Image (cartoon, rainbow, N blue to C red; front, side, top):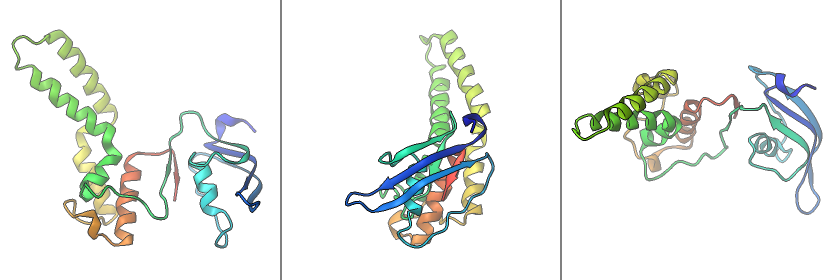
Length: 188
């Protein structure tokens, strides 16, 4: 099995919980990029354990499990955690934190042009580098992207307190945040 052609590979994986309960036994699987796979089983069969292993959150198993080199894996837990100190939009924005940081730094660099003692050549070089990164991430459209994603997932209003959300609303907010991270492998 060639590692490079699959987004995820698992070979002879076995998971035994303390006390001897074996939930996964000799699992071998491989997913091609773009595949849509469902994992079915009764309660306690090991579905969540399998997903946690695939997400790289559980390393206590025998056998092998790996994502393709450079592949980002995103997991939406059954009970997703939201930051209670942030509103809906603040939690969703976490999914686009890298792009937001680029935009914020671009604004900081642009403001420094007003300083007569600033090193203009260094500022222009950094601004050009940031602009390339923002262009590559389609960062200039970040607010539009957020609006479209929130609307498509029927998220609550951005200024709503997350402590007031229902379970389904919490999962939609967490899913929106996760999708904005653009994982190569999405585990739901």
